[in-house]
Length: 351
Image 1 (cartoon, helix red, strand yellow):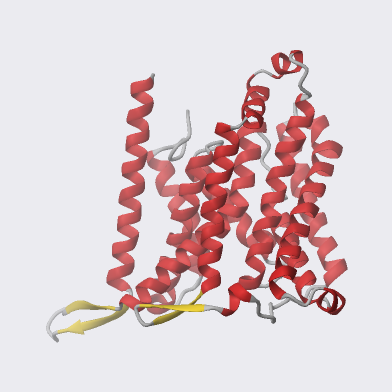
Image 2 (cartoon, helix red, strand yellow):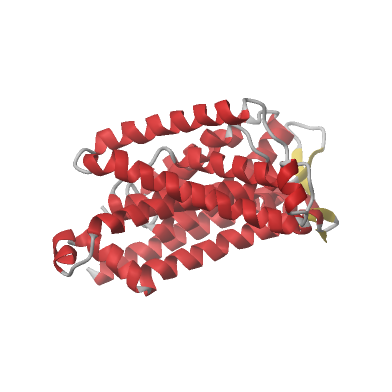
């Protein structure tokens, strides 16, 4: 079994490398201008490679990938450990964005906390707290009686996503909020290949990578992670040791929802706050979770980056050459379909 698993893992890594290299080469060759050479027959096309445009596409892909991961990580953890696919995850992401925006732009809070960096940190912490509290309420009040009914879980979480959307409409209205104030990280910039980039892009990417490492260490290297995984494998044995398994499951679900609101809060200075965030990132996150392999945390992390880079490459190509921006939204599902044709269980999933 070990040999088979290692071979499967190697083939997955090879597939990831092929996809990533293919995307980067495609982006490098098509970023810039395609010029017709010659006048006979169909002629020939040459690409003027623009390193500046390529760097924009690459950083945009990494940024999208990390934003997707901030939603998908919670989905992956909850599904991998509890077999619950939480369709309300996008709603939590949206609420995190609105909370961070409100904390940073409310006049009374500005007067009390004039430091923009401190206000941003306060908004992020408040978003995490609200997301965790709402997640605990959802798990204890609605999902706990339905663990034996997976279909009912899907219906409940989908209904909760609609309730969250309507709650945001009631509190903040339907008009999108654009982040209009500057603070430390989002006012700095740097140059790469002659292009100007916000330092905040690097901050979001760094937060994503830090989260990948932190959650992996939590689940694999800490006593809490051992208890969580043991509770999933054999809840009766863990309960016999005096550990409250239900409380463990509540903690896992709370963590998953808090990660989503963290993602929304971190994304707000870049994306603002709008109702569309609820579905915009949920579809891509679901694609990343399935692409990486249901229940595989490492697979979700890698798949999120692949989906983000794919969206950035296709978005640039679609707008520049096809004049069809719709391909950007379709690209995650196209990538998912192509991979599942070859590996029905996903990149790191098990049969």
